[in-house]
Length: 495
Image 1: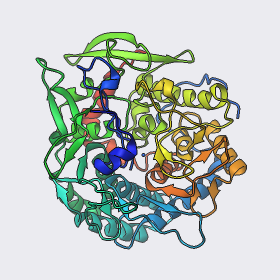
Image 2: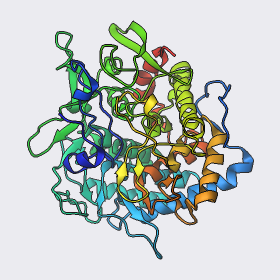
Image 3: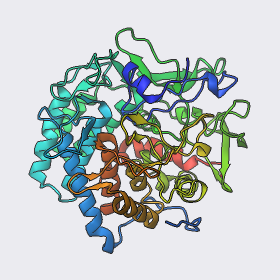
């Protein structure tokens, strides 16, 4: 299968969040395997700070600014949410008046609307009765959506909930597709809503009763680990039941949220975690030859590899983008549960992004993650050297604010300074709807759009900064505590 970019797979399969896959283990080179990826999407010296302890509390002097940023970001989520109750994919905020939400939405976008509303209630931006009413409206909309095997297809009409079979912008056909990673973000949003508003608990439990993650899982077959890798499929097309030709093999990518959810609810075996790859195997072509060694954990032989970037050992992402590495710990407390592996790696990932922008490319700004192209469209942006893919994601001078918000727990001072600079130097902040989606710092062109995915990450990151743990409660108890936390406690990256 040839490599597909996000917009190609968007109309074929779709995935509201970056869905990054690893080549089949039998492939002699990385170029023979698909990426399977789709959207939805000032000075800084090396830090000597210790690995983070899970959360970073806000400095009181910054609290008013962070709260303003949250309020305006949540206003954009409100503007993106239709009367039907679904949070649309994007909206143009360049014109006068209230922006018009796009016709399309995905499970990820809907999940963003749910957790952003919980965050708004928890931070007092809206009252509890308003939060309850809005969540009820959103859950009612979700209950009306067509599902297959307990999961949601990748694109719905945000105004009436019907399944999209043609793309609203150009009429191109869309095959309904069940994406494992996109469904993970909607399930996460529903879990957060149920935790915040117990009156919705039974309804949400009924919704999730048939969402069995084993549907996406190919069990491990030691006799043929190529066909049986012990990993999750990218997804399935509903018209034929045909699966994607790839699995999500890379560990340090956002599809691990689906893995955590399945392990936590018992629908996936715990050894699935160890069958995901820290780097590709040494014999496979990749961005750099990995150092490391084989180790055995829970009876599974694991290639415990790493890359080196600017003198730092690091477990790479697939494409080197910020939200591959840092969207999941907005919810699952990886830095706290695995301080010397995930916590350290997250910190180093941020440092590599900062140094790439400020020192390697000398842009004067940093933070590279899939986003709206300032001149239109959508593209993956990242730091190629910290991604496994040979022809990985490149920064291209395009900086996206959500990446800086994801960095708050690990480089707080630099993140806030970077955001202030983007707002001051480019007008990247909309006083009413928050940060615009992206900035080309070489040309000064700023995106006209806000995207639900990226605003949802901003809202979650600010909630974690202003009220640590607010959105993490459903991911600290139950199966997360009994099954996921022990796995992370055993993780020993070779960094």
